[in-house]
Length: 54
Image 1 (tube, rainbow, N blue to C red):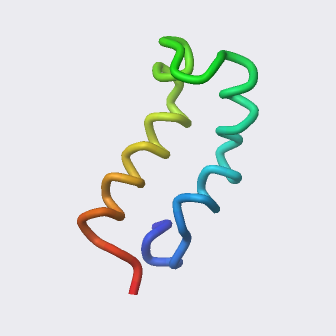
Image 2 (spheres, rainbow, N blue to C red; image 1 turned 90 degrees about the horizontal axis):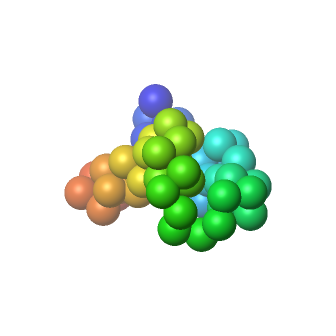
């Protein structure tokens, strides 16, 4: 749905509050990587590499 709406990974990062999670758990911590929001964002970034926005 994000791709269909033309949203960038930066916009999704803001929507999911990834910056706050990085501040709370620390950059690269296991707890951060286990969060569903973080997994969604990383997955979308990988998807965009294969299917760039038009």
